[in-house]
Length: 515
Image (cartoon, rainbow, N blue to C red; front, side, top):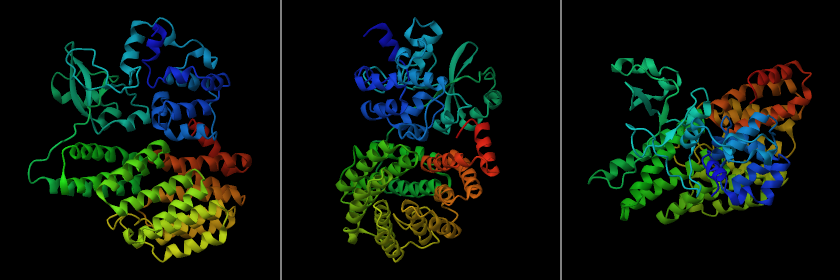
């Protein structure tokens, strides 16, 4: 490996040489076709939308998805430079100045490269070692800008901060909120000598420790914990969105996978069922975060665990999830076929699960342009709908979100897909009025779609009002699907910028440096 290649390998994502030097990548770079660049990295590296966004910095998974779909472009040279550095693309390939890592690095730059390296040249994810004495072996360093919301959201609730006290490095625990509130010094003042703390301290995220065995008699208590925690995380997702639930789901999955390694018999069956349940939740949360690749991976994992456990209900539900993913890709035939496959497992389905599968088939029929069959299916779904007073934590099982108001929201979505925005507006309005308060994320998504319906009937002021309401919610919750819909509505409104409400919305977005 040459010296420039060795330096290149120290950057956050560093796409493989075989991809970097491929004709497809060279052509995409010459054209500055960042949609194609991201698509190639996503499919051939392979790297998820989240990994690409983290490497580029100051970018979300949703925006990566927008770029790949060509809903948004990359025009800022500063962003292009971040992409070059994050992916390890030499400057000349993008008609940019030579990147710092291409020349002889300064000692400071070399140290930064080492600290920022998150993967080795062969693609492994071994954590970098801490360079100074007094650190904790085996804990990777993650450099975090407290003003960067993407960095902040990635932090655990308690972080370990590397600080220097009397010239020696020490590691101390600190609450994430205190750190991000630029209150490190204040938080540590009660610790005697721990006063001289820099706000640019390194953040150390400990590797999760997987349990392998439970003491005798603790198995049932552990299983009960996982069940209760799942309901808590489902409720958090419904109230606040994927950003506030995804880390917790993965934490529980990591513990479950550790326990599975040494579990046998009936206890293993229960752990497998729980693992499948959490994996399906992870799939949904990744999909809502616009990380479709991870969503597909976790759906497959859920299906494998459900099959090993003999959990027919979960097997059916993973087919439902695959139908949803197919609908998201506008693959009408697959969406319909998978939804019908779910319904063939009737003995394993609760009534709300059956309602969810039937309305999912209706969505596929709308994509296929079959209006009559679509609405017949939606009418049929109402016969099996969940009780409207749902607590939003899936206590009654999968599909309990599929209330009558949810089905009507899907009817409104179908009207949009059938190019009938006039019918969609009135249906959205009625359904939103009846939607339980706990489903705030579903409310936001429906409002974003309502904004699109208003654009369709040229009611631009109402569309702007709905889009403005949704944007803040979507950014705060991490729901990429909702943000994508809101952005689509705003883009559609750009042609009506002479309308005062639209102009105010566009000005507000510009003042906040985009979406």
